[in-house]
Image (cartoon, rainbow, N blue to C red; front, side, top):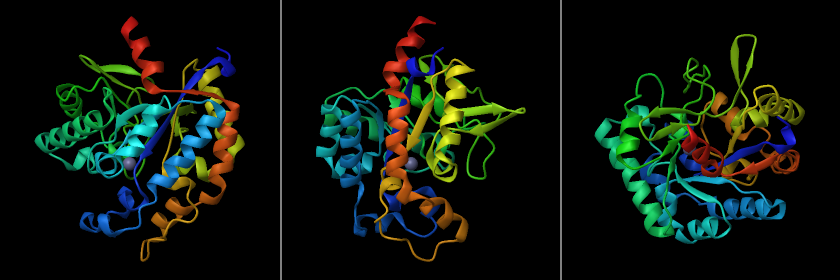
Length: 283
Ligand SMILES: [Zn+2]
């Protein structure tokens, strides 16, 4: 497959900087409403970047954000992007009981659909928090009416990951497709190749090479993800956090907009539902 003809999936997890899971020990949920919100202007910047490149994407949006910024939801949909769910309150699926998880994903889906008037089919768990210990989550997603998930990261990582999971889209339950975020298979191991902190850590040329390997060698579409706060060098700094969290969160944020522009230019990008749901219907 020619890399230039592969349409890869661009995904944005719509949340603000104070909602990041690694900050949870430092910022109580009850404080969220008192923090300076940056998500609206950051998503506006992303929408403008995508529009200038004529690229489309999937926005996995928190219910908490949609409730406060309904006009942002309208703009995402009006520009031809897919609106999908990141749950309501950014709680890890692995921290919730099946009932509490249902409540969270059902609430988010209804809210996003009520605001936007479009059907929400996709879900991404906060911090890729579906893995071997909570595969029941897919039954819950099916019950809530989701058609696909992009919630498993087939790597070994200290906060998440299921290294033995399939690397590419597969039917995980009747009616539900799991589309794992992209890894590069190298020397018998899976390496994270789909964005987030690794994209900011590695030189751009390395990230591009990894994505091309997936397109050309594996013949598969890649899934790339980032967050609105990752392009925001001016965001308020969270004080008192540990060194690892600080490094992971703020590393190379000032370089991110230019890197994203290159990424948008070097590959073709589209929505998750367009790339994966139609193909799944053929199986
Ligand atoms: Zn998230």
